[in-house]
Amino acid sequence: MADQHPINRRAVLATLGGAALATSASPGVLPGETGDSTAPAVDKALMATRDGRLGGYMFLDQATSKVDPKRDLLITSARVPSGESLPVRIRPATMSVFRVDTTVDDFTGEGGWYWTNGQTEGKTRFESGRTPLINTPPGGGPLVMVVYQADGTVHWYSLQIDLRC
Image 1 (tube, rainbow, N blue to C red):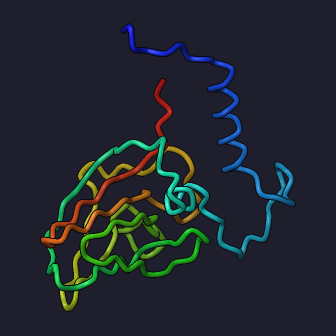
Image 2: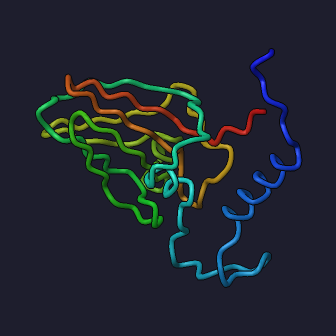
Image 3: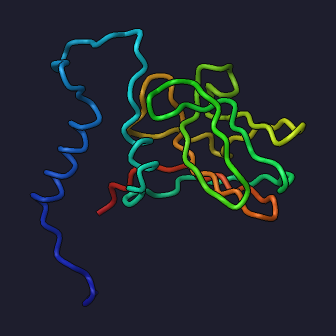
């Protein structure tokens, strides 16, 4: 207990309040108003993880797959930070973060996603089927960090902002 630092509750609340405002408000749109309903919502949580600001997230769940390590992995039911449904390509021995597109079908609606690896097609979902608790734009499912190891092992991690004190 000697290595614990005191927590400034005001700083924590200011940070959480700022994060809540940043994820719920858009420039030019007042609270209670709806913006352009045809434009996809920008996924600020996904943008933050892709910009290297991964701190402050925890793993809710994980899954593992095995694929051909000589081929790229293509997530075919993913959303990019701009909110669009676009495939995400991951090269062997790298990692990436994507948001599941829940508008594809019932499987993705429950938090699962589809991928291809060369001619192999697959689908994966987290055992608990957990979806994010906060920061989920419309049509978005779990925020997933994928680690594609050089031996073809793929680790999938469900990310959630860590609000624990």
